[in-house]
Image (cartoon, rainbow, N blue to C red; front, top):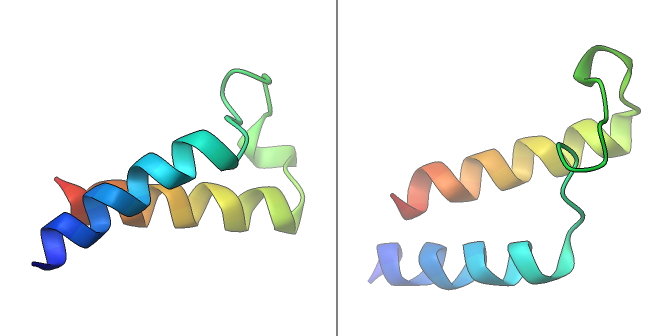
Length: 49
């Protein structure tokens, strides 16, 4: 059940949130909001797998 929720959430994240790597954002120079988005997407992706 949890995996299904995180799989769905990963699809929603991919559709809504920006891709920081495609934008060429350097994570060492990223703003706090960009780091928050990156961390959230990483967490959801890890849980979906």
